[in-house]
Length: 567
Image (cartoon, rainbow, N blue to C red; front, side, top):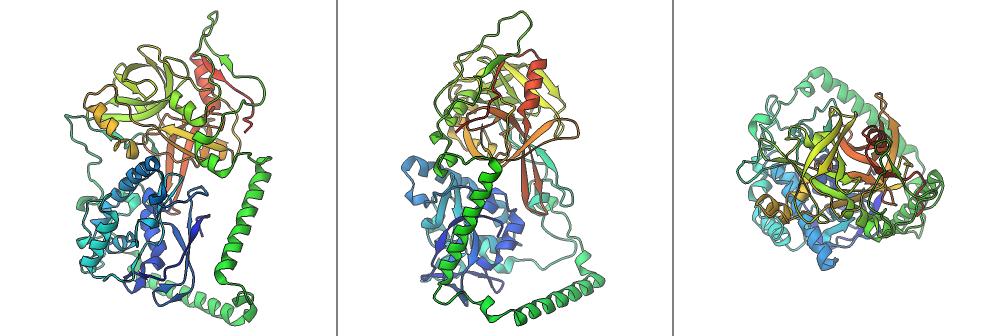
């Protein structure tokens, strides 16, 4: 079980399991995730099933798990209006990401059936993310013909997806296996080498076309014929087949010995104990042990409840232990001047008031990234966000600023190399009524962290961005926040300290801050790493330890807090 957060248990008495190639869709979870990627948006859309007893294709109950954090797991229909609108917008985006797969004849019959659910009650929302339970099932009273399944799909998702599944559901379209013809995996479609996990700068694929340009994602877009690499024919070699047969026979012998020799008591639940109750009791005991170990590693138990950890708007900002933030930097002999230090409010307030979107016009469209203020007229971002743009022709916008402001580059460091220095300081044409963020070199494993920025896959569907690109300089897209934990902090071979964390970031978050529970910047979100073999995804920030060093080298004025955040 790769996902640890228990979503719930469902009973499927009035549902029927869909079948593909003589096996229930629900039994093919590993194949589905293998194609989508365990940590991809599409892969996380499917809750991981733990199957109960089955009679044919009928299951008594199923337990569902996800890697998204959070105890509150309402269906999308149970959310308050404003939250539901946000969740529905996210659902539209997730469903839209399946279009290339639904157009691929090799995988579309499986994926299209997996997307089918009995009704919208089976769309859960966890930490703002839509998650499917009961996927691969439909009501028991509907026909499983292609037309009936397509009609059911439209009745469930019609308000969020305008596609038709008639072609996708057709199993007859699946081509015969061919040695020299195949389909690109999600990793290769994204330009990643399956044998060598590659890193990517967060901003690179977030390109926004202007009104007079045509949006081009890649030269060969995923899903087209020319970008599909040939399948390797190693698995047709007779020697390899013989080796596989030997291994299978050996494993089968071991399995047979184990089943035959273990005691009857080991195979049964204790008398009078329901299987479902036993599973739930085990899950709860494991959850308690996880929390205990986390407290030991942290050295203290977090005083916030789970809901507060999920939603940064509910987490009150408390003073850090030790001295108040100090004003640092500045040229010798000059008196540093900064706006009053922010106090009170919430993590969300701090991010809303101290983070902005950066637009860097390019030859085709504009690249988009994030940045955070260190003073009323200066903000820090990644160098690769503004790379290739006119250094004097940049723009900054946020809801706090209220309009599009011109900016210029006043300092840079690094060459945008993965894991190296990647900094830029922008100066606005006039000071703004913002709250600069405090930087801190303090970062602890498993401590709660938050991100604020403008990930392209969400921001590009924000109506305010469309209005902004059409000329409304007062339109400011919504900032997107996420939460997670620090996994580890290490120093790279080049001497740059790196913070690895689990707060969701993607293209467009580049240059945005990673902050602690007191709203202090502990790093700049800079790059991600996808490993197609394991399905894991690494999220990396350049530590504030080096950012502070860079700002000091540039004689910039900023606030620094060295105490431990006490919440």
